[in-house]
Length: 371
Image (cartoon, helix red, strand yellow):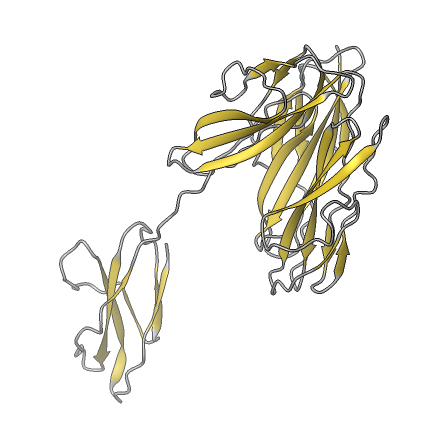
């Protein structure tokens, strides 16, 4: 840690300069050897321990070497680093047939400081099923028998770090018989200016058999805004004033088909006053992989024209759950899961954030084939 000190100059005609002394607060009140000497009315003390308290005094001296008494003592308290809460990731929404074994996966949950201490799964909607163990990272259950319209099972994952802070996330498991689930499309990410009327667009969502019965928009995070109609495919809102740093708003769209099956997608609206939004880039955006091989996804070419990218977060959106090597790294890997003769598609989303909180997303599709 480096610390810069400033003081009011003396006005004596024979002033020659200043000396600065410091001590750790735990040491005796003894300022014997100067840490800095010069003629400026400011100085920087280098390589201090940020976990300790330091106290400082300044003295003036004249051309004959006589030194003044100590200035008022100024002390700098150590930086207090607060524990950051864990981020839960309940894995992608899934669609399976009745009787299949379902794997829930919280393996991509993260904690930035002291690590994840525990996992706990709770079913919050749908016909009750029995989890193999609700307190493990990846429990399983058998999809129940369903009627022609299928059912929706919703699960909530709570992760706790070693300081007791928690994070929560949910996932949906669609259990189907004949009905195919809908595909939600919340539209592209947007960057707009303050005061502009913004239209969210879920009109490209689709359902291939019985049609979409309802739309439901929810906002994640702050600042909170009011949508014109939470159940419209194209609600609007007026972008609020956000200051020079801008702000990033995230909206989730959940569509439900006539049979009750659901799917969720999200979009980001960056409100920019002076700060330009970052640009997320994923390589590859589409590729094929053979089951059992190591797949690498690279977001390191994402860019920001101002202060730079401060965080990366990978999440799986569709497909059989996989474990990412590091969901918070620009580059992450996973082992391609087993598939059937027709192959299976896995979809991922990368979300980046710049130093002022604006966000951007990009998607990657990996099609897994058999050996």
